[in-house]
Image 1 (spheres, rainbow, N blue to C red):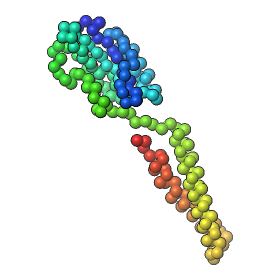
Image 2 (tube, one colour):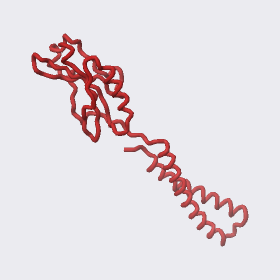
Image 3 (cartoon, rainbow, N blue to C red):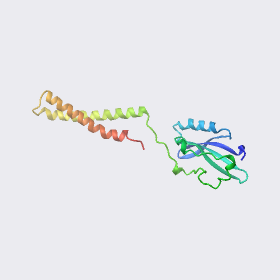
Image 4 (tube, rainbow, N blue to C red):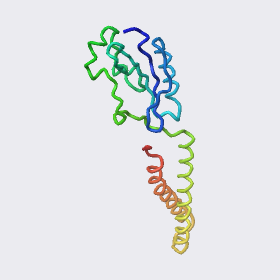
Length: 180
């Protein structure tokens, strides 16, 4: 096959749909992969890949080969067939890229550091308010008890710490757990 019958496409997934972001000529493989690497770090792009499209003018058919997908291990990448072997492999389905979107893995979104800190501050503030309320009510109850001085203070510290921990743990599990 002549080199003018193939090109590289940078595909991006946005809003659940794959779109062609850019096309590169037969010599633009490295440029297409570099562009895909840059796009992969952007927030509005869900996924990115580079495919090689090969057109056979004799058959009038077009085939696509996956050239680059971020996160794919080196051993899992598909190797491109030599130009003369294209017709010999034309019947094999594993050489063809299946564009079934249900089989694609979408990378998990990660929380930013500032978002994590804000959530932790919110959990601590709410837990402190809960602990203060329980400590206040415990102080009212202990006022009428026989405990005085350091014993009463120690009991209030224990009540405050325990109520803080009991309020903070479930909130931390919910708000700091894995994002779906």
